[in-house]
Length: 156
DNA sequence: GCCAACGTTGGC
DNA sequence: GCCAACGTTGGC
Image (cartoon, rainbow, N blue to C red; front, side, top):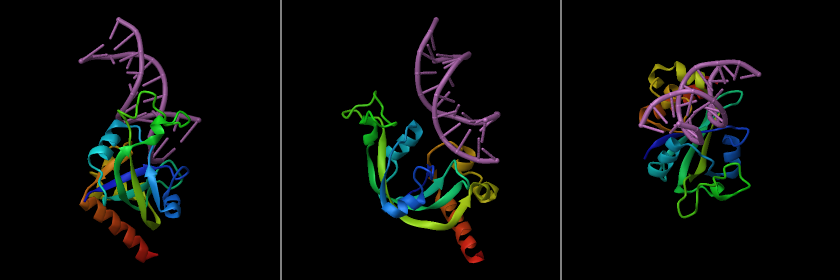
């Protein structure tokens, strides 16, 4: 079982949207590094940190779980979608989706600034290479992050 | 295959 | 809105 961090803009789709619909297709990934992870490594049962980007409080907002593994992202074949890719075809699809399910919303977002200031997290992909939208998270990083979230719970 | 120009992501 | 850090495109 592996751990991941998925980014999204909460204006488009955030933890509250996932909590409402319970299960959602993770689509629109158009970066080869992220695609390769989705295609080759993300598996059913993997745990996912849902990260909110480009918003007021950027950071980790909650947890999701992978419930369906790699399949072609249907938006790449839809000419009306902004994710349409004319160079892709159903017999040779270029882009990949997975499905995730809601697990938990944190009482409050764990801010990026807190993650950056924790020496135990200085090797996180999120810290070292900000721009990747699907990132691996180590078991240790996962535990440190949940520890920070839980400490926030008891302080409140 | 190099590299300049351009486009995108995403924090601040 | 700015800008740094990437990624992609296309001429040669």
